[in-house]
Length: 242
Image (cartoon, rainbow, N blue to C red; front, side, top):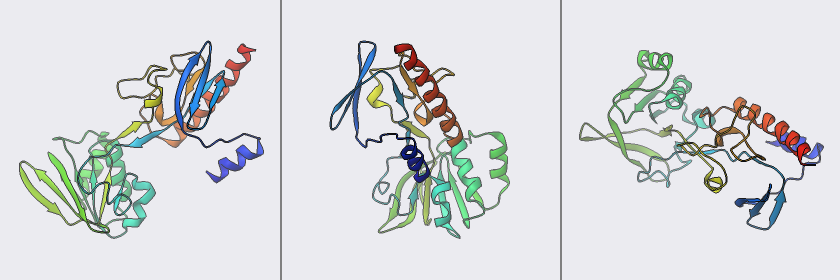
């Protein structure tokens, strides 16, 4: 982010840190309302990202960043040599397991469904590793701990059990930050902004990029590419407005 800030400063980009309240159509242009003022614009690029989906159990909010994380790559090294639980059964969960397997001492993979839904190569890699304990048909009920995570309660086939883990990595998907724009443009069934290959949303002059946009692949390289495309196409769109 520091590199990005330097680049914006070098290119005389004016950075305003305000919270968007709503964006509305104003003729063929737009009105952007923030927590401080209003802006009239001819085009809008939405790059609002996505947030981690929570499991919604006791202890989750209280112990956030105290042994609970939603990003294995970000925080994985903090769990070096520890026993941890990874919650989820899709690609992101199994990618987390694959990343953590050489860092932690043991992984309990807690899967709500009766099977893993990730790519087959990830499934096979996880199943072959004796360090990984796969718990299917399992639902997390509570994350335990005072100052830090000390354990996890779960129910499997009607029986309540407990794991004495020091870390909980939650990987059950992400929610796009698009609620503010739902009355402006078309969203898909999961709330992502529908865009075409040029980054254009359903309303002319609105572009979107990154985790908030349809595609469901939360990768830095994809977000960066879409952001570049949206910027170029927005600039070209503005030339048609003059």
